Image (cartoon, rainbow, N blue to C red):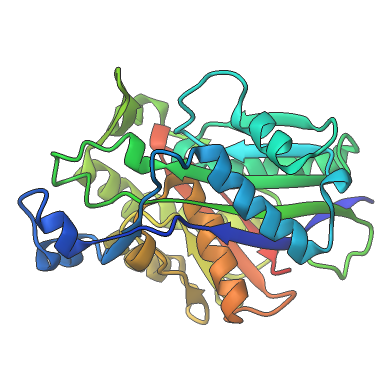
Length: 315
């Protein structure tokens, strides 16, 4: 039976770093106010000449190089993003053009903060069905472009970046794999996280999201582990959507992953929406905090009040 695995990961962030002290000069806030409420200290901000597809292409190129693959090896490109300004060409097609990928299926996936785990599941399904052999799965967002920089409750949260994974078919059960996805949404509460209007602006109902994430999601994340055949205590790492340290830490604790490294990239990167999970995961791999074959829970949640999670084997 054909399965799929993550062969390699990569990440990219713009050079400009915006600190809490910088923000204190822009809105009524302080380093103490931000760190005590969301745990963020810095975030990376893309310039006007750095579009979303450029961030995505940089991360994808790193993942390809790490996997030892060329653009010609890819037949499916999936980009999870909610900050694509143009409707066509989509981000996936633009990334494919930047990298010189010949003739791939190219699709964008807009599930906001849960976008990458939705896209990863879609790639896994395509590979298992035999409609793709090797895919690039990318999460990329330029949240600075949709931020209201006069609103101190939201502008302190956001950052820009991208993370990518090369997903390929495997017939060897002992190789790293991608477990079954557990996904869903609460569409009647979709208003709790929004990017809407002209020009589009990010807004959220922070307390509603916090209560939902810390009370409803732990049992769902445990079910994702069960579907993959793992107990939470067997996990080597947990990579949750990097929304807010005050959500990440209690959620990881309630999942019961007592032996796992918990990704806390939100501290230095802020909330990068669909980029946050692959960005944080790639950094864990790069720093050697997880080893090849280790089981890692990836769990995205947020906009639309959507969620998607799966256990993957570390490349």
